[in-house]
Amino acid sequence: MEHNLSKAEPFKLIYFNGRGRAEVIRLLFAQADVSYEDIRINRTEWPALKSKTPYGHIPILYVNDKVLAESHAIERYLARKFGLLGTNEWEAAKIDEIICNLEDVWQKMQSWLHEGNATEKDEMFKKLVKETIAPFMQRYEQFLLNSRSPYFVGNKISLADIAVFNMLNYFQELRTHYPKLAEFADKIGQMPRIKAWIDKRPNTNF
Image (cartoon, rainbow, N blue to C red; front, side, top):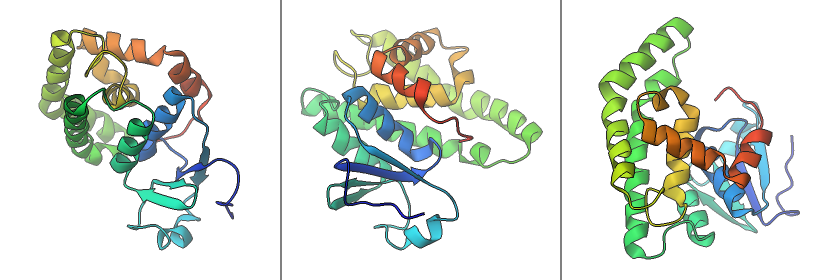
């Protein structure tokens, strides 16, 4: 399939047909109410595209005729552009802190994400949550309990909130033992633009 990258929206996001590394980016566009072209490629298209990407992987974001790679770089660029990276340098740094910590969580979940056996995957998830992920969730729960606002950083929604929400939305089971995180995820998920995106986004297996 050929994709025309010279017309339509100035923003064009290229990724597989799944949430994965691109969903926080899509949520940023949704919250900012900014239109973009959501180009979803299939696995057969990927080999031909791979050599044309800056580092041999996706997502990549086209901004008119310029291209930006690496999911976190794209997230920070858009968050800054859309006013979702805090109100000062300290808030921006604290948002970065949470994003870096979340990456640790995702890395620890990789073995589970790639496990094909359903029974083993279920047991692996329970073990991961109990032994590895629980400390992260406890810290995030405490982070919110200590916050002076409903958000992780500052007094309005930011990239940090969207990224944490995305994880909790992906792994619904993580909410069970953390009432403050569950309340937070419900609040973010009911924001009109976020909810509208979740209601209409494609149903994918990752």
